[in-house]
Length: 429
Image (cartoon, rainbow, N blue to C red; front, side):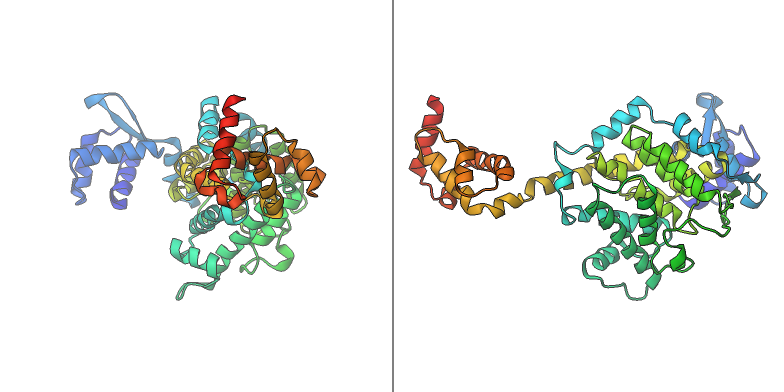
């Protein structure tokens, strides 16, 4: 599929609504864009899936039309009807565009780690997510850093030669904002402090955002290039609307619905002088992470679908296209991220295992060598394990005893014969 063929088809259908496939192919041929019937059919299916074209009829009676959104976007933005900000959108997005039960179940299934407690993970365990989102969110803004450039910058603070310094700054800002969220996940919330902090971190050293404007609702007008949307430009109302937006979001019970709401409505309000879409992409991860779900990296988000979804919300007050793009991208990226987080949970070392290494080893050995059952809590307390940590250390001891094998006995001053005798006693009880 070439972009020229797609554009030719969209333009032809716009000028000739209810045209058939033969007429479209003939038009392509006249423009030196010949393609086989199978290639043409695949292209039309893709245009349907991307909500650009719809068809009616069957077999030879099929006719093609532009979807309402594509018909709207086919008109140059300067000629489209003005779409002023409406405070009703904040409530309508919440009430009228919720996920179906099937969509909720799908997202929950693909986004749930295997009984993993993500709250225990370190920043290092989230590196894949930080890399993916820093790269993909910046790319959606036109950033020219490659994935490898981004990885090198985040790991070694080495900026890519020959590429704009501002692009590197944008990526570093993402890293710092994501680390802020992940390091403070127990206290960050869908509130004014969090959204201001995230904006401040994302906008450091970016042109067009002064220090006074970092983390502060804007007091000057903004315009949307390439869109007929007219943002709210009353500096007295913007903070009130932002507070209302966040309050409504907190009342949504489903974390995925909260996430989609934040992704769409934050840029719709344009509360800040710049960086609003980036704030939305990071804020939309907070309800997911707090719910123990895999976050959304945007690594598989199609830029065209995302942009059309945002414009559809801006100008048509419809979040459904953005929602569909979200679901498709989350479905594509979540399996790899869930696997990464599961492995991180399984591979991490409990800090208590390091703190009480000697005590744990002594109690493991005593458990195996002693022919009567021990009170493990008492044994640990006798070794000066803190009372409030004794239950957790006991669980570590039991896990080691249950999984100890011939190859690992030396680490706990136990012999193979002693372990075999312990297993035999277990079988008898």
